[in-house]
Structure formats: C-alpha cells, structure tokens
Length: 188
Image (cartoon, rainbow, N blue to C red; front, side, top):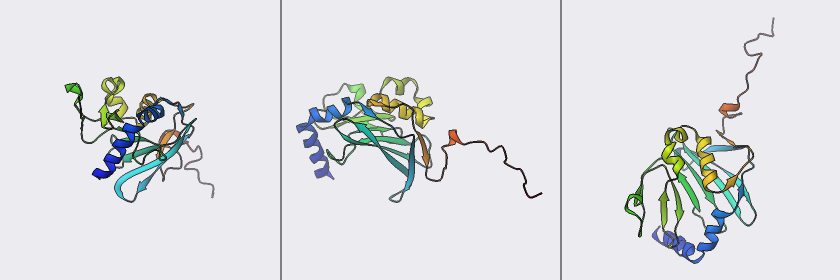
C-alpha cells in the first residue's frame, strides 16, 4: 500500500499542472439518474458511476453510499488514464483527516464532512467549503443537494441534477408516480 501511495504522490508532484487542469476544466453531467448497486466486496455499501463529459479528459463520477446510514456517502471523480485513485473526493462521514505539511493549525485536522484533493507535494489534503460549514445538516439530509455542492466545487455543470436511486427502484423516490387506478377491481 505504501508503494502505491508513493507512486501517486510522485505522479501528482510531476504532473501537478495537469492534475489542477482536471479540476479547473468544465465537466458536464448529462445523466438523469445515477443508479447505485450493491457492492459485493463491501457489505451494506452501494455505488454507481456515470461518465462526465470533458473536453480533454476521460472522467467518471462515482457515487458511493452506506445502505445503513443515509448520511454516509461519498462522491469521487476518477481519471483512470491518469491514476487509479480518485482525483477529487468528498466524504460525508467517517474519520477525520490529518493534513500533512505546513498548514495553518485549525486546518491541520479536518472532521467530516470534507473534500479531498492533492497538493503540489502530492499529499492528500482535506478541506471544507463554506456551504458545508453553514448548511451541513441540510446537505447531509439530502444527497442530491450534497451532489449539487460537490458539482459546484468541482466545476461540474448540469441542466438537471440527476436522481440517485438503487437498483431495485424503478423510479427514484421523488419521481414515483401515483397510480389513479390503484385499488380498483376490474374483475366485477
């Protein structure tokens, strides 16, 4: 594991300008639904991916959520041609993150929810944005609103924010249609 982390650290250090250009580039989210599936290797966890349209990059957005806690979810942006780890990530729950290096003391330990990115030294750092400080409870209770916050931070544009639903739902919960004939007996 340490070799793998060092490999990413060196890659980020060497290609930091390219790495930053991923974040700065406009990414378009066109999917109307992000369907998440149970992950066989992680009990109680489901995840799903959709492509992001970007001019120079082949990017994927992954949504991961805990089936047992609606407030435990992650959003990740991958560029698999660049590295196997997420380039940018958001964690709503879990352990806090201890930032390395010369960082102002209050920003040294960052509790969840927080964003992750790499710095110019290739170190993974965690940080918070203003909306997660002021509207934390609202954003934790609505994964779509949290996704909108992530999209704003990562320069992802969309015409309509996609719904996040699991494999067993035909329609996402907020889009379920009322059947006006429900309960009618047609065998009379």
